[in-house]
Image (cartoon, rainbow, N blue to C red):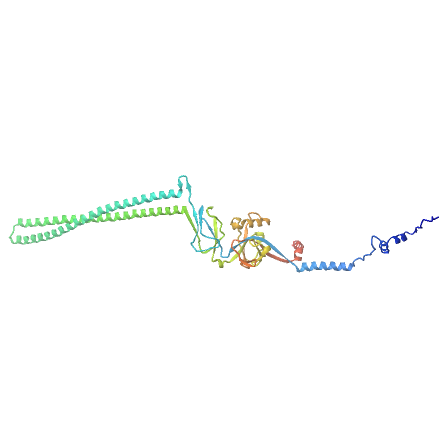
Length: 447
């Protein structure tokens, strides 16, 4: 029963919603909230097979056509083709002056460095003390030489005086002998005349005998004069011999003095050399790799610089690599090399090319390696598993270019630059590398 003031409410809720909302809202609410149902179709098995075959074929073609190159990494440095001369000190000291600059062209014999080799003692500089002693020795030697010359001259003057007197005496005796000879001749004539007169009876026997005695007396005096003359000649000869001997003895002694003075002068020069030492260029070239500072204490044999022979424009460089025996066994002339200079990072400036021209027949011990690259070389070798004392072989590489392009500008390669290099040794197909273990196993079974 329905009251008169009540309205009838429809029983259909859809009708109620239709009355409350617009038809568009009702249509939107009529769909499933999870979306419509859709059925997927599986990919065709044929397409999957074709794609797999395409990928496998690509790998097979890459393995057959593609190649892999075996590389050996070694370290080294740039050196001049004509070699380089190490400028080093021959004795310990302190560097006073350096007259050479990096890259300077020098002539043979040009002074490059000056060293002080002075040593100190409690009472002063050693070279100064030695110089004082040498000066005393020089004065003593000169005094002895002058005294010996003076004494020899006095003896020579005495002998010369005796020689003069003897010669005068000999001349006088010569005159007396000549007079005696005349007296003898006259006495002989007188005796002959008296003998004739005695035979004629004009003179007596006594007168003849007197004349004969006068002749004998004259001959006796003449004989005595001749003996004196002979004695004087003998004395004169002895005096002249003494004079000559004295001159020879003096010359011998003076020669000894000269040798002593020369030896003393040599000691003076050596003492000066101990105080200052000059290092000169052995030949013309370019000074590089200066390794010092003024005032530095140096030891004997320490390297100060490197001299590259020739002019700077004509320098030709090559790379020297050092490889252990395990690497050197597969290195041959003609193999290509990719070089990375440490001064020019390859990430920016690329790799530089080269070609092997020579491999040393005998190895180098670690102590024979270049000092500025020895640590890098030994480090690379030990990183590859070699021992610290393993001998290394030197590999000479001809550079494809003497320049490196740096930001569009050609920079010349300088001696002493360190580098790393990859030696391109063996190039094979990829399938050969994959099949190599199987081939090796088959070969061992056959043998």
